Amino acid sequence: APGARLIGLIGAGLGPSLSPALHEREADRLGLRYQYRRLDLLELGLEPERIGELLAAARLTGYTGLNITHPVKQLVTAHLDVLSEEAAVLGAVNTVLFKGGKALGYNTDASGFARSAMGGLAGADMDRIVLLGAGGAGAAVAHALLGIGAGAIRVLDLDADRSARLVDALGAHFGRHRISAGPLDELQSALAAADGLVHATPTGMREHPGSAVPQAFLRPGLWVADVVYFPLETELLTAARAAGCRVLDGGRMAVYQAVDSMRLFTGVEPNADRMLRHFDEL
Ligand code: NAD
Figure 1 (tube, rainbow, N blue to C red):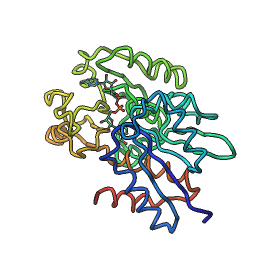
Figure 2: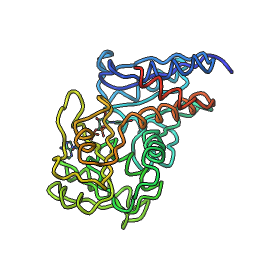
Figure 3: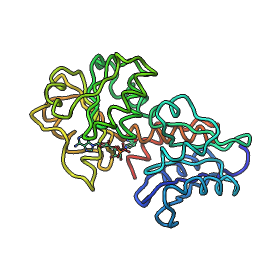
């Protein structure tokens, strides 16, 4: 393998992130010289709007690439030379690679969810899916589902503007009949007619306990995927299991996005199963 690789993670409040441990352990196993550093906007005292300066500094100081997380996944796109197809459609980037004098932007949240769903929801009906939450994670999920052949997605969000913007961007790309937005009070009736639900709001995270979906809306025959992975077993997933639903937690999406980023950074194929085991231990 060529020289040492230096990777940064840019976001605000990165303390609990598992990415450094996940990347560095796998790089060790692959025999790569690889350092993964937190570049925390809060610790650096930088406003998100200064992401361009931090990106330029990382490029000048020899970073191979960067992972980008909340709250700068959208802001960073203005400072990149080339965007992958999904990054361009989503207007959001979680992986930057410096290569050939250019800064290239990718979105491996989308590819990570696609791989997670193809494994964890293999054979599940995908004709009608309800997506709750149209933020960064929800957008990546919608792109992934449409890319792997979902029939139609109904997007619900507290913020109707956000769901409308997502539907507009993805409808233009994948076909307007395949994605639509509805009001949040439609959740129960939308779920009654759906094959599956993907939950992509922060509800259920340790800092935002609870469930955005009343248990009474769940039934056997509906599959339920959560993108939240802190904790892995959210209140929603516990309720869904109790209701007899097939479930998929957010852990595999998190691991597979790291797998896809590492492949971009190194050109080497990470061992995804080993990374899943690492993740379970962390
Ligand atoms: P975000 O702030 O960009 O979007 C969240 C959206 O949810 C917002 O549009 C908000 O209006 C909406 N919302 C909030 N509460 C709601 C409710 N009760 N009903 C309907 N809509 C509601 O956040 P994000 O970056 O998309 O992250 C969401 C979650 O996804 C977080 O828990 C994050 O940790 C997780 N995530 C997981 C992965 C993974 O790999 N598993 C990747 C990215 C994000």
